[in-house]
Structures are given as structure tokens and as C-alpha cells.
Amino acid sequence: MKIVGSTELKTRSLGDSLQFVLIRSPGWTEVAFEVILIGGFLFYAWRQSSAILAIFAVAGIVGMAIN
Image 1 (tube, rainbow, N blue to C red):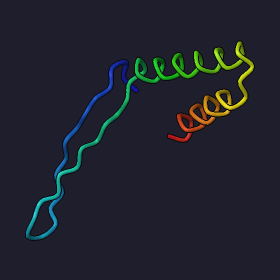
Image 2 (image 1 turned 90 degrees about the vertical axis):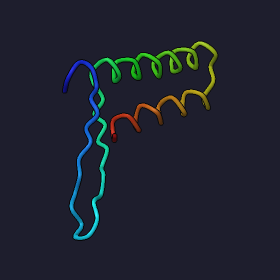
Image 3 (image 1 turned 120 degrees about the vertical axis):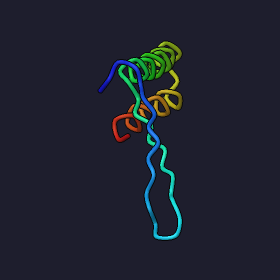
């Protein structure tokens, strides 16, 4: 994984036509920004004793891990 993300355009031949595929790879800076942002929401939820906001923040963290 690179420090800065990258974007790559690939083509696939489908007989009579071409298919263009755009591949996006996030870098360490983007992942770190997401972790800090969601961690901030989780800290705010803890300070405000908001269970719903904490659940949404944890769901965001789980979604990042799955992605």
C-alpha cells in the first residue's frame, strides 16, 4: 500500500467492444484520515453518552475493516 492513493484505468476486450475499468486504491494517508475522523466521532459519542452515535461510529469502523 502506497502513502498516497492511486487510480488506474484498464481496458478489457469483450469481442466487438471494449470495457473500461477504473480501479481506485486508497493510500495510507486516506486510511489514517478515515480512522481519525471516525475515532473523533466515537470520542464525541462517548463524551456525550450517545449510544446511537457510538453505534454509527462502530459501524463505520467495521465497514472500513471490511472494505
